[in-house]
Image 1 (spheres, rainbow, N blue to C red):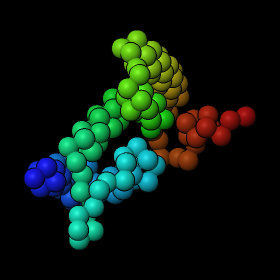
Image 2 (spheres, rainbow, N blue to C red):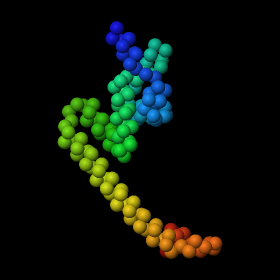
Image 3 (cartoon, rainbow, N blue to C red):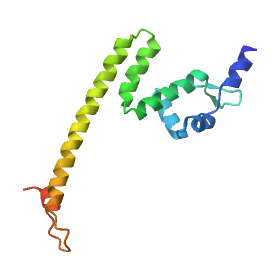
Image 4 (tube, rainbow, N blue to C red):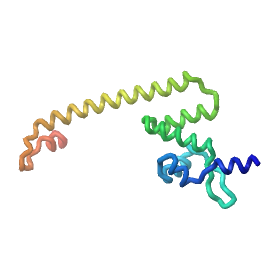
Length: 139
């Protein structure tokens, strides 16, 4: 009876993709790079994703939405899989991620400032003389 219940809770890859809002290819990729484990298969060879597989995919997708890299997600999942993590461990990984985001924001602000500066030099004329191109070409 337990096998029947498990089979009813498991879903095929197409249903998993539809439920999670991601593409089938994304699920394949996460399996290939071993973020998702190889799922069980039905008697007919269909991949069957358990509730745990579905939760793991949600975790991965949500982590990606929050900007975590695949390696950061792998680290988080490794801690969770081993079951020997503390809230402090997760906090430290997340804090590093937040610091990296801050650096990226600073870099983007510098980039924006530079592009605004060189764009102001442009008279938007019909000649090929363009200070933006001149700046990009450099000395």
